[in-house]
Image (cartoon, rainbow, N blue to C red):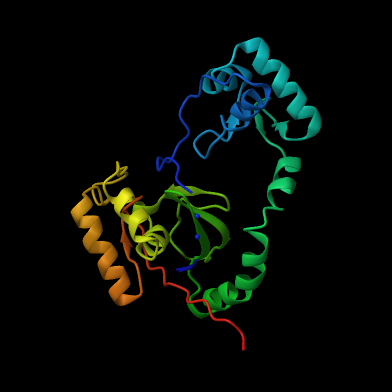
Length: 228
């Protein structure tokens, strides 16, 4: 179950593609960091070079600087992974902190009432980003972690956020490419239109085996209220 509220337009694909074309120093540095994603949480130097579209020499220089600063660190096998220092900086993101602080007591209440997975998510362009997650001990395993991104149409949280987004954004998203993960994933624009209309009518979004073939989620829309 998911507690929810919103944002910019970016790719709705799940995994990061191999990058290339970074010309400035900041672009090259960022291309190293974005070589990591949920399918590639740990990489050797050669893989970082390839995925970032950089020469091995340049990749080595940047990786060394990032490791010395703490943005990257090496695991037991010698591969590089995102470091704790980078996580500390990311945790300061203003969109996450106030929302998490306000929502966490309600998220905990939701978990206590259901003992199911409870998630807090926001929209970032064409993706849903999970910023908090409480896991039920006996719940079905899901491909969710804090910081995970999925296309809006493929998850219950994403459908709830998309259904209550700006009409022009909904239309642009609906006619764009809709990534498929299972035979149940919504991939047709007219089907997506109907699903979004049903979400608005019922106040809930159901995602039935859209990302994996053994998970059903039922997010509810949160309505913001202003204190008197």
